[in-house]
Image 1: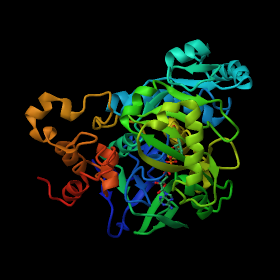
Image 2: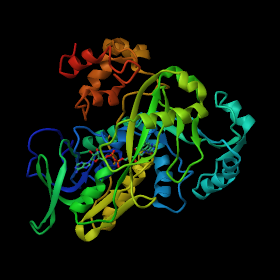
Image 3: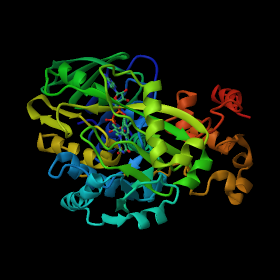
Image 4: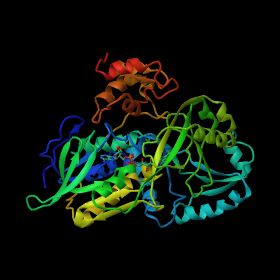
Length: 479
Ligand SMILES: Cc1cc2nc3c(=O)[nH]c(=O)nc-3n(C[C@H](O)[C@H](O)[C@H](O)COP(=O)(O)OP(=O)(O)OC[C@H]3O[C@@H](n4cnc5c(N)ncnc54)[C@H](O)[C@@H]3O)c2cc1C
């Protein structure tokens, strides 16, 4: 096996170096693929590349979810998803604390709005226990309204799930990719995989990956292509599942709405999913959504009048005062649903191939457990990983509203006045943070990428006031 470089390269443009032969290539730098690359990076004798179609990490479904760190209380017991969500909850919770990913353990209340739903709550608590989660408790209407006084009228009780948390969905894949690159993984962006051929070479066969930027060679291939995992599977001659994009539209309310809600307010789940929720975000906003619409178009990430209107109706029941608040933005994400209500993670040793498909509505939570599981499958299939080593530590920027932000830190401002120079006033983002993001291990490729790293342009004016200044900074005119 090749000896890894001390730090990996991040490439976005130009032809890929054809000489680059990797032990493992991971396709897809969403939260799942980036997590797998990070886990593999522990094994320094293995040369790894993370290959992504987009110009940035976390630019697919991973940027458009509800940002909940699930306990897995409501998973189907016995499924792979149930196990990996439960394990992932613990792993990501610990990892977030270690590297500064914002998390708030606000807890969830699964609200019963009629007698049938109320009757279902003890069964849901028992299901939670079968999933290894024992802390769910049924609370009556009085206790529910004491906890959530702004809840709409008519709720009969709730299931309290104290360990459900909210998390920053943007920092998570970035932390994984940053740590992976610092540990030697090459990250190739703008490199959509187009087809795969098998080549025998120097006694060890391998994949030739034909990407938009030229070929790469990989002894082992991991498919973490999210919505396109079925397409990549077919490139390998596999037709084991088909991805049906299930759209979830969401509304983001402005920060004054945060005072209206203390927990994640969930409905009793239906066959189509977890249903519409109201939840705070770690940035101090409030989310309403998501819808659940099965589509055919894997690019249909737009919001619709019908979807927003349905959310309006449901939001009016859950938290009527919310609808009087200002809307900051709307967005939509596509879940990678398949024919089965479980993840589709399979390994083919003879083909040196692992597919990581069907990572539907829980992949953010489960990402680190998926990464450990996939690494185990690679080892079982014959990849000699060698002894794992510790990863270089990462400390991600402090984006959470409940943590001290740089503009609030007198010591930091005294040491570097750029942390006192606010560029984005809605989100209080300073010049120092913009500068740090632009110079980071995995720098942004667009103002959207800068937003995910700093919150700049993510506030109520959506960049109306700071957009031009940010564009200048992005174009290299730091001042
Ligand atoms: C509305 C909604 C709400 C959700 N809420 C939650 C939640 O609260 N908590 C939670 O844990 N999970 C949640 N999820 C699920 C979670 O967001 C996903 O499971 C997770 O983001 C999937 O990550 P991924 O890396 O598999 O996919 P993606 O993020 O889509 O990454 C796949 C990557 O592969 C790349 N790619 C595709 N084809 C190719 C190719 N040919 N060559 C190279 N690259 C390619 C894509 O560009 C993309 O970047 C939600 C999802 C949605 C849509």
